[in-house]
Amino acid sequence: MAKVSTRYVCQECGADYPKWIGKCEACGAWNSIVEEQPREATPKGLSGKSGRRIQFVGLKGEAKPPPRRIIGIEEFDRVCGGGLVPGSALLVGGDPGIGKSTLLLQAVARLASHCRCVYISGEEAVDQVRMRAQRLDLADATVQLASATSLRDIIASLDADTPDVVVIDSIQTMYMDSLDSAPGTVAQVRACALELIRHAKRQGYTLFLVGHVTKEGQIAGPRVLEHMVDTVLYFEGERGHQFRILRSVKNRFGATDEIGVFEMTDAGLQEVVNPSALFLAERRGNVSGSCVFAGMEGTRPVLVEIQALVAESSLSTPRRAVVGWDSSRLAMIMAVLDARCGLALSGNDVYLNVAGGLRISEPAADLAVAAALVSSITDIPVTADMVVFGEIGLSGEVRAVAQSDTRLKEAAKLGFAQALVPARRRKDRKPVAPAVSPSIRQIGHVQDLVAMFRPLEGSPSASRNGKASGDKS
Ligand code: TYD
Ligand code: MG
Image 1 (cartoon, rainbow, N blue to C red):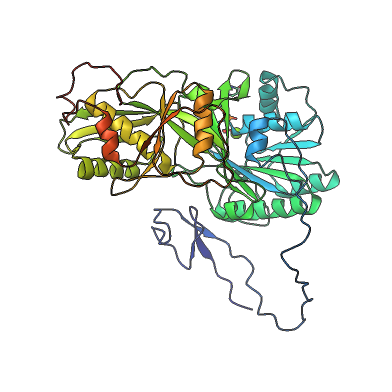
Image 2 (image 1 turned 135 degrees about the vertical axis):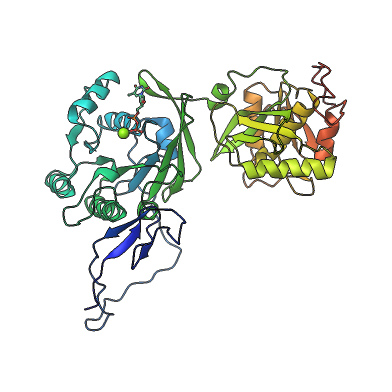
């Protein structure tokens, strides 16, 4: 037998060390290393019994799509790839208080009309969950509710009467009595999740694991949890906004980067059928520094307003503040505007905001960000009925982006008459011919974009002429 010794495990990334250290060498976290009791020593090699021979097959053959259990909340179903797959495990991560418990309670209440659903809360007492159900007007749903944290009890109960859907809220509160570590440690979270996932696969129920997110934005404890489950969903939203976005970041049974949009109301989470209209609801036309970006979230087009404010700075290191977009990407766009168009922003504070609390990660937003910046510098509004999309390269060229037809179609649907798009088009595999399309203006270089904003004096203070013509031709 190999010698069994105590391990020291980082609670952030799961790396383990033979002795305690203050800073994890793998992820750089301070004070995250905790002593854990050893797992069983690894058995020696494969000597002895020989294995069974595996049957290899070709790639061609009949593959059945997995059966699905439809939740009945369309936004949720779509993010899951068209319903829940029996025997699969889903991790739902998100900040505390964002609405994970609310969302899952609403989901099981819907499912309860055609499936047997179990909701196990390790965080709240039965009364608390009942109160929430009453507030959401779901108290009549036939959900089996329990408050429990012992994995042994939970597995025994699920064995006795196997349901179709199980929610564990949250995995950080569960504990396995065979381990010495406290609930919430990497060892406990990993062991409990593994046991539950195995059980779900064996019994064929769909398992939801709720996971908290650390302030760094990772699911607390181990990334390993993300590898163990079939689907990882993040429930996110900006504090102070009522929008919540359910985003799939991993899905073995569907597309990733799919989003579902919800609104948190007094009566719980409501689906938002037309997110573009919602994100643009408070937009004021003809204001400089604002531009509508036609984006894609998964398979779905979403129009959002990008706002920029460029102001003269009194600081030696001007401020750069970005909400909803990548700050290094903003730095790149500003560098391109400086180097290729002579628009120096080094002495200005620059603020960029994606209105409505959405987070955009697409490079296709580059051109819209550049347009908002140039519009703010020149104090000339971008035409109110124009959408913009396109990626910007380091030499200032505007590059083609995928799914331009879908973007244009959404823009037309919401009444936008013009579109500023890359000159080159990427060949989409399945081009959709938009029935009504905005009038298209193609652009090959950021210089052409800057030329659209006339007159241009190059500094924010020099061009405060109050002109609000929205001229772009
Ligand atoms: P909750 O689902 O408990 O969050 P999580 O499980 O992610 O920690 O959501 C709690 C928040 O949602 C709380 O701040 C109140 C708000 N909320 C509403 O605004 N309306 C409602 O109908 C419900 C049930 C909650
Ligand atoms: Mg909760």
